[in-house]
Amino acid sequence: MPAKHQRHSNEIEEQRRTDAEIIDDMLEVMEPPPSPGTYLECKAELKRCIRCLRYYEQAERLPSPATFKEGLADYLDALHAVKRKFVLVRSCHPGGYDDDTFLEELGDEIARIQRAKDAVKVRPGGRRENRVAAATVEMAAHLIDPSFHNPADPDLERARQLSPVKLTKNGRWHRLAMLLFEAVTGRQEAHSLTWKYMKEFHARRKRGPVPPRLFIGDYD
Image (cartoon, rainbow, N blue to C red):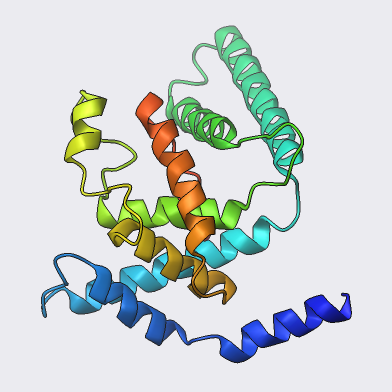
């Protein structure tokens, strides 16, 4: 690592706040603040979100978006091939495969990987997307509104307008995203970076539902 980058990295580590300090700030941003009965549950959920984002950040160091999407496409092709062969084998032995559990689980996995593949953005040229910043923006939106990715209201425009997730500089969504990004990277006041991905995500959501970039359960 070049000396200049090494010094910058050391400075970030020296100034890095503890998770407890960051979580306390996040709890103050939450509206309404958690009641005494739900305080510990809320704190545990914030710790879980930070842990999930850290695992995601470590995993995202490896492939580029294009390589990652190609890998998902190859896996998806393999899953579809398994499904075709299974259906063929079952048709030849109708009495031996009465249980549809495997086929249902295979269908669930195909749907999950398709959503993940669709969510990967490959930019033609230019700088690589900061996927950690983008993920913290989405995670912050989910913390404010758990139904953000899958609103119950079929009228998506109405659901978007009624959602407490608002595109406002230094608003609740923005401040939570910055705090999550700080917890993962140690960088404080990532104001412009998180705002950039908030605007992009907001524009995508206006065009239709946006599949979640990551599933918390995958990183537990």
